[in-house]
Length: 452
Image (cartoon, rainbow, N blue to C red; front, side, top):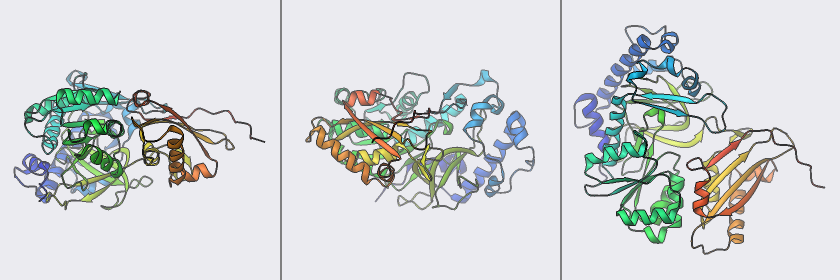
């Protein structure tokens, strides 16, 4: 029997003082919290006072009425952050500044109070409890030196589970990371999906059967990737969705692995049509929109994340009634390389890693402004060590996979995209850009002469 997610009873206790979630009581709580949040924001923030000036003091009548409020996005967090803030800057515990890769827009600034950070720690502790037993040692392959960074928050949260937590930082050298895992006796790992795949492929022989669970976070983790890691390491793999804007924690898989259970005491999730910005039914894909329910420092009301996903409903095979999200990996505003296609790193990964023997991948997309000059996809790859194939054979396999890709293949075949491949070690490949494994260059490329 699949155990019910621990988030079920945790959210129930926080929202209606029960040990089992009742969706009707949860919705009542969310409506009260939503109206309190809106009233607070209108009273304290110039941004919301202007934006929600028609909001009635009596509040929204139902959660469905939320769709009548305007949507905000990353541009607002870049240009209006101080006007969104509802408290004095002296009461802010942490400020995160984020610049979107390849963008000239103002960087986003997100402010958190000490209470916001405590809510995130609680979520992390509950979510991790299904994969960490007392006495297990956890290794976080994400940054942790800065106060309230992902690694620091996880380390603090894990003390509540009596589980030692070590923070390594991003995977820089798979062999060095494997040595650290063995030295500290880590049985649970947390890391970026692409970096964890590189580790599993490069160090399969050293790590297989040493790891009991892996949590993937920070970027999209498609099913083929989680299966590959699980098979190579002989462990259970969980997926987490979270953004800086959600307070890092957003949703996490249960042991049924049937969607990510959401942090419903703190966040409301909507899926909207990217063009009309109107909500779509459960099971239909669109853009993920979040509303915070307990933040007083910088509440976000209908914030469009730019991420694609769909809601799966409340009937999970684990028995929980917590709403579930299925992230789809695509970014609504990924740079278009052809009409109707937005090329993302997950498209590249799905093609490149289909070739057995590739352990790491970094990509740079050079976008041409000239209609007769193809865009260029520069791939830097690493082979597993040791590899059963020579580089020429492996490169042939990669090019075949790129041509077979339904997203990349047509662009290569019609000449609108050109791909180059360079080879290096896994450590050097991972060091090229850290967590940003696809860079987009939007400068104008000089037109190239056509071959005779």
